[in-house]
Length: 188
Image (cartoon, rainbow, N blue to C red; front, side, top):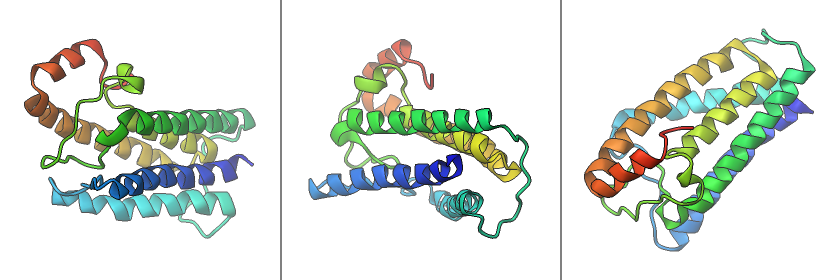
């Protein structure tokens, strides 16, 4: 059952983000700005698709590059389910808190207001925290070395993107963003 939940987590995560993007498009807002600032971001989707395949392969016994598991504990896999659930709930709260300001990538042409309420009162980057929780939870469910590499690489990529976004936000929102940074942590 935990394995199926690990796969379902990906479906729910992607579903939440795409639903939000489509809802915003209906309101005339282009929320998908991925890769507009740095064209090398387009190297990420093939690696993400391979990650998704690895999770589904582990969950449904499809052919896989590796089935080696580090941890063989039901308690740890249930902990992974709990962490994935926390990540999904954090993602949902983030999407709701973002309102019409939600964007995938940096939208320098049509920025919205700075969001500092909801989950953003506790973390400046709750979506990245939620994604990290989901990846960590999936590693605990499947405990495959490939997923461990992905967790580490994703944390680096998330931090890289956060630094890009913070540079933009400092310039765009000025002192308001600086004050927000003094009150709220970057991650947790």
